[in-house]
Amino acid sequence: MPNPVFQEVVEAEGHLIDSHLMERIFDTVVEYGGRFEVEQFRIGRTNSEASYLRLKVEAPGRELMEQMLQQLVGLGCSPVEGSDAQLATVERDRCAPEDFYSTTNHRTLIRSQQRWIEVENQRMDALVVVEEGRAECRRLRDLRAGDRVVAGMRGIRVLPEAKERDRLAFAFMSNGVSSERQVETAVRQTAALIQQTLGQGRKVLVVAGPVVVHAGGAPGLALLVRHGFVQGILSGNALGVHDLEAALFGTSLGLRLSDGRQEEHGHRNHMRAINVVYRCGGIRAAVESGRVKSGIMYECIRNEVPFVLAGSLRDDGPLPETITDMNEAQDAYAAHLKDAGLVLCLGTMLHSIATGNMAPSWIRFVCVDINPAVVTKVSDRGTGQAVGVIADVGLFVALLAKTLVQE
Image 1: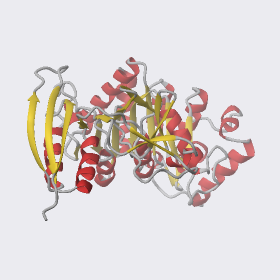
Image 2 (image 1 turned 30 degrees about the vertical axis):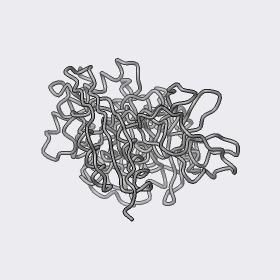
Image 3 (image 1 turned 45 degrees about the vertical axis):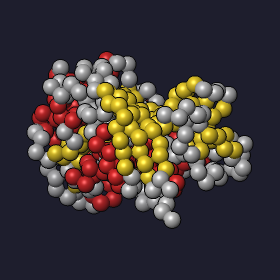
Image 4 (image 1 turned 180 degrees about the vertical axis):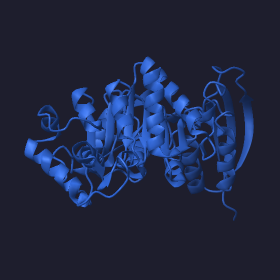
């Protein structure tokens, strides 16, 4: 006997053509061995008018249909059937039901008591907990017995972010990753994005690796902090250590920043910097006592700009302010992402990807790295507004600071 054919009718609304969502929807159906029939398609004629798609899909089996629906929901489709989201009760802490719904980083709504409610604290790879008429994303480790979580694929609506339709104003936001883009052009347009974000009352965050210091970008980043273009820095222990090393001894990894030559016994300077900070009682105390007089950490302390230094297994020291509990560090990163409008990732794969995993897709990301693989990975995190710039981080930051401060 042949396998029965299962059918569903789904609909999607948004900038389906501009964001290439429609072709991805069709490809997904074919990928799972299914067939589709377009029952209705209405194209948006202006920047503000959305397109609408109603699609009947078929799959040669229930399991394939469920897998297909899971992918289609992530692309913004939702079954036309008007049932509420299915809820399942968590029986033990940190143990979800087998068929729990795993979130994307796109804006999500769930149907509860015949009305759509928006999911709060949106992030990818989380669960949706429904309580007292509200829904929120919650990580697996934060689940508690008795929580009611969304299961299956019914009653869920995902709204993917559209790519920029104003291509003349921000053309590079639509171009993805490119090594042929002029650095000066990318700098000017990034500067415009920073000013636009601040004008909207939202925060600009910088995710930075120690290469910012090694490549000579620390003075530029410090300048951006001093003039109010950055509202928070998310990084690891190494950025703080080498920034303080540069401020105290004029070296980074033992190399003199003035001429790039090896300092005698310079290999121990980063440990000497950590020791100075401990003797002072912390980074803030080192700045307020006058021991540290320049650099990124200095400007953060002087201008009350918060920073998070997340620890790792290979850290030297670490600095007193470095958070060595990974769960606590993740929470600190996520807290600063609230109300953020733009994240500028500078020369760090680990922290950039981690931040991308935590952030909803409506926060814009600009990733700058000399390594194309880093830029591509960050751009592939599912963020519709991510763009990559393959360039020397030190040069990029220096030009960006010069452009913004002069303006």
